[in-house]
Length: 138
Ligand code: DQA
Image (cartoon, rainbow, N blue to C red; front, side):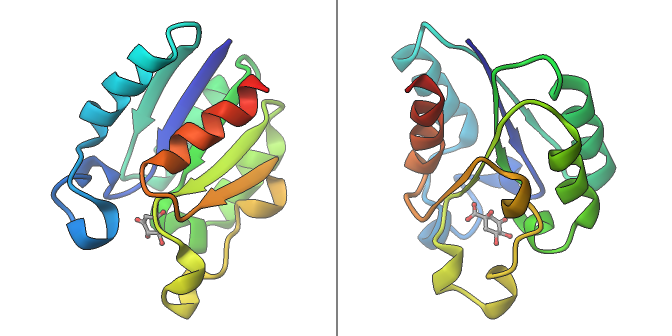
């Protein structure tokens, strides 16, 4: 099973950025542990701070994988382009957020990703990614 985690803007700073909200684990540390825990999954990851690069990545992998775990970060709330890309591809996408965006500012309640996603997982910290992965294994 081939699953890719795609992370949007500022998620390269996980472990350093707003640690009260996002925790103190870097994505690389977390990703390594996840790979070790699920050796049966061909797991890869991609991060970009650039909206168009995230769209390009969805086009590149989106017709040839078993699942995409997408944390579009702030673009979740602004990007019609990313939302359209999720709808354009054939691989199922699970939208994830580390924080519970519904408990945060009003502008974070809007998602352009959700309507094209198979499901949404939010608010479980870094475990949100793992829960999304498990949803593909069922
Ligand atoms: C986030 C929530 C977004 O609102 C925010 O812009 C992020 C991270 C999360 O994982 O909780 O950068 O997607």
